Length: 116
Image 1 (cartoon, helix red, strand yellow):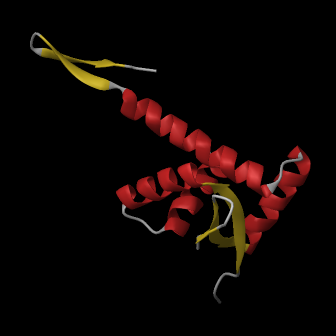
Image 2 (cartoon, rainbow, N blue to C red; image 1 turned 60 degrees about the vertical axis):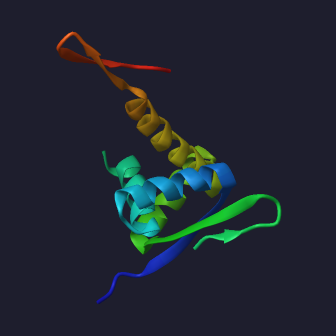
């Protein structure tokens, strides 16, 4: 029996949408796989252009996962939009922090220099 899926949508700024799509394409996976990975990491360790300069990010999750998310949002008082945007911004911020370190040649040995 196939697992039931529900759509989960959030309107996000175009700049954030662009970063999400770039990273998703860099990873070589589908957008729904990218979003599933981000959501699962948070809990277990589409798209269309809008007139007001935002885009809708939509993906499917399992019924069980959707119910867990609803309970979490109710408990924390967050909206789906706040949750999804915050989660994506956190992941991208972590990724940018890692990528911002640059290798420098220091007389035969390489050092990682963090730039913030």
